[in-house]
Length: 357
Image 1 (cartoon, helix red, strand yellow):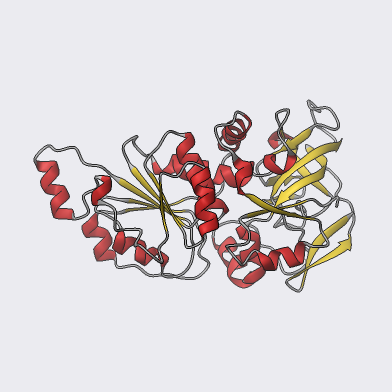
Image 2 (image 1 turned 60 degrees about the vertical axis):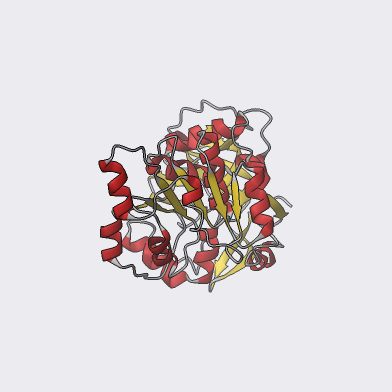
């Protein structure tokens, strides 16, 4: 098959052997695959990326050589391996969480040699995680179920009440997905923050209630107007008096060094800070500020199969208009150039790869 494979840290289009499904696995033909920010991290800083994955129980493989990336996929069933139930007919369009397992071990699809990703013409996926795409859903939209399920998980882990104020910092594909997931759950107001006017416009289409350009206005300057008490003593005084207080949840979807410290400084007392953006470098915060503000810092990563299924239903039923974030497409031959262009936030949000073109 043709695939974009990593060679010395660069993407090279080559002919590579077709993957062969083993016990409990399905062979699929890739119809669409999103370029994820994690793919950009892996290509841009492979040592840091591989180090984080090893330290957290992920793939131990060096992605610089021999890896077919791509884990945000939609595909059609071509064949089944041995020991499969074969509940879905050949030709069914499917998607699923990027978790590979079988006789050859386990790993993240697109980051493990045994489980080549969607930047190639064919993939093997576990039958148990193969989900039929509802009729009428385009493959490029179905492929977005994975990144949007990441947002579904982040919102679930935030354990928000209906009155909480949500602030989304960074409107890349994951930040935009968080905005959509919040609105699908009925939360509001949702404040969307990004330097890019194009990305702020996409957030507005997904339902964001307040748009902020941090070059013009601090994302932490509207707490009072949103009914949020910022200071610890003022909040305690309100609680002692039996007054109803409004909580805030800040979704950090930027993932650059120093960002967490700025969030800690700007967060109101008793805020939850959800780390959704992936920062590959060590960062520092002032623990005294965290303690005195009683901040709750939580990480969120990936999406479970149940969260993936829920997200797929939300997209298929129209509660989430995932296709809004698609700003470009490419075939394999243009993939390397498109990866380079994705560094310009005003040009693209989400780009979909079609290995057949």
